[in-house]
Length: 112
Image (cartoon, rainbow, N blue to C red):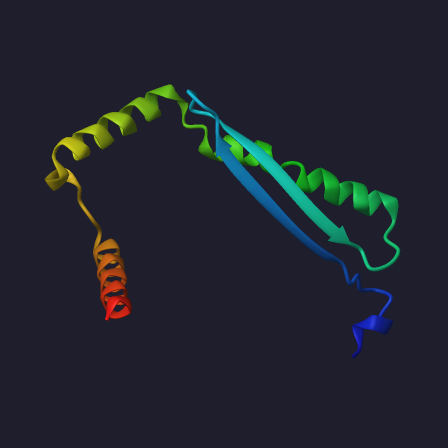
């Protein structure tokens, strides 16, 4: 079936990009969101409004996902500092070890 003739389908195109930049002397980031949408025809206004509202929820979702609180950040920072002082404290999973080996092997191959 050719969807170009199917009135029950919407042939829209959308692409979105998010750029995150750290703010100086802060543990915060600035987000720039760019979105291009081509609806390729008529779409009712209420559907467009619903999708715009959904796409604008991204910053809020990111904040909720990554906001760990100062206590958790302090714990992670302390662990990172200890690892930097003594790298032998850093433990890798088998998957991470395999991934590191694959990357090392590819880098050696590329240098040949």
